Length: 125
Image 1: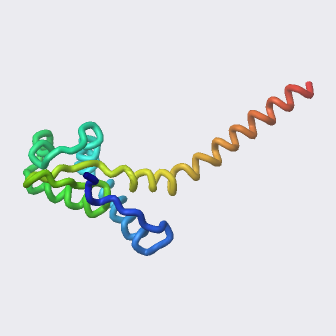
Image 2: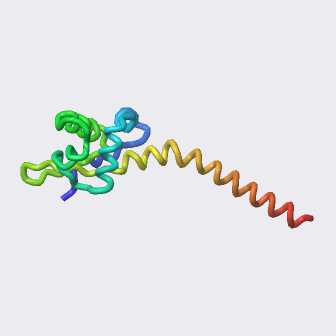
Image 3: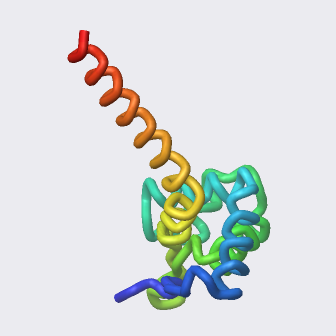
């Protein structure tokens, strides 16, 4: 059974921009990042198990999880009356692809070109 919350949206649409805004806002909070780390380490946790390691009330954890779910960072699967939470890594991968990889790629290419230039100049000596 597939958890709810896995959505693919065109990266040029207004909806994509809106979702990315929600993702960045969600990731800005330490408690929400801690919840994501816990879901990465142990997928499929209930609200009760996630509350166990947090220094906040159940209602606060629930609100954080709702925000993470709305941002697409958390997917849910119902097992009877129990709601299980799973990390959805797709929005984080999108951030990496859109905002991190393109900048690090140019640095890698520059280092490769520098290496090639140094090797070429040593061959001429």
